Length: 280
Image 1 (cartoon, rainbow, N blue to C red):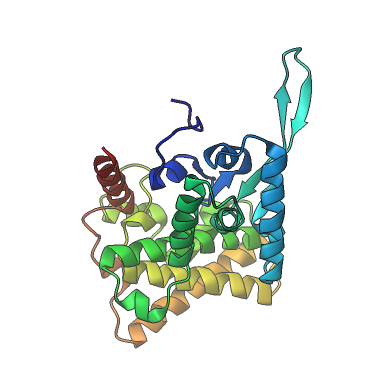
Image 2 (spheres, rainbow, N blue to C red):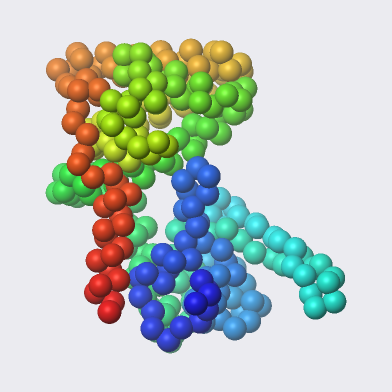
């Protein structure tokens, strides 16, 4: 079945199936695909819903351009003529606003409102709620924050003149992990080739890396770093500062923290299998 073929039976999995992940691990949805799933036959009418969603975004004091990103594409007609088709890359928050402004008489709209509301709320968790999460739930939460943090850090590093991002990120890992590179960490954790080291960290280790990421970005901006060498040196120094803070607080060094038995990708696969069983 086509990924966006109209169906009669909808579930949360419907929205997961049309979700995309970019090279930085950031999730997004295409407006054209969401239009089909939300049962809007005309793009013109769906654009009207998106316009209301954009207004709601602006009224909340949030930049609509960050959540509704233009993604126009060329499409071939029957006579081989190419026409420009308007499309957008939507964040989870944008999808939530679209669902909120959609036709509430549609059953799938109600489901979309619930799905995107719950998932968006998970990203705004309070300290009290965080403490009540299981270890694996904390891992998912911290991993999402590190993914977003790394994306933002990469943009800042790029503006600072970084071209060799492996070197840049390894500089930070070396500072935090007492000289270990990403490959060294992967080997110590006995991971498979190209398996993500952050997906194989516990919540405490992820939190240490998140602190390294956010503080490095702040320092790069504050010091107006403009060369790759300075950016790498900055990342390494921040890694060492975070390591020193952990030691002074009597914490466990990151390389001494246990590696979870299952990676987050494995847990995610198990969760999806469970969802499919429940749908049968």
